[in-house]
Amino acid sequence: MHSQSLKLAVGSLVVGMIVLALKYAAYWITGSVALYSDAVESIVNVVTAGVALLAVRIAAKPADANHPFGHHKVEYFSAVIEGVMIVVGALLIVHEAYGNLFAPRPFSAPIEGLAVNGLASVINGIWCWLLI
Image (cartoon, rainbow, N blue to C red; front, side, top):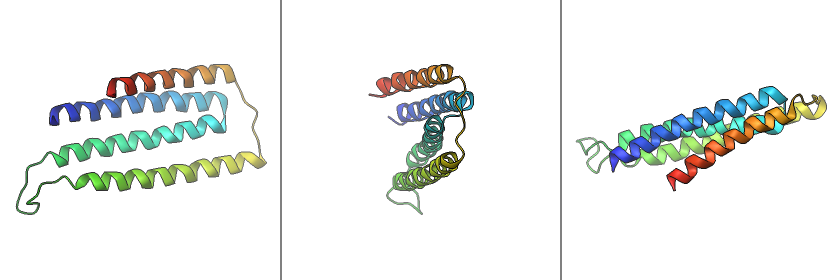
């Protein structure tokens, strides 16, 4: 079971980085705040996938003198880090949206940006389907 969990955690990290790169490219192409917020959400996903990978590796360690019941509680730290990342991401999005509210930028290449973002969504959807 540990090997399968480890492979899924690595896969989630790799897919998350690919999706992040595509979503950031979509933002860069268009300048859209909505696509920026989507890219920031992907940063949260990549960081939490990395933390999950670390947590899976630590939780699999056998009990020792300092942890007589095992290392499974590391999963709680993973959840706390995910919560903190969500708050940081939300603050970054609010900051960008607030700045764009008073100094809006025109969109450039909206069709191309949405196509790149759509590709990221398809990749994410396929990975989700595989995980289920």
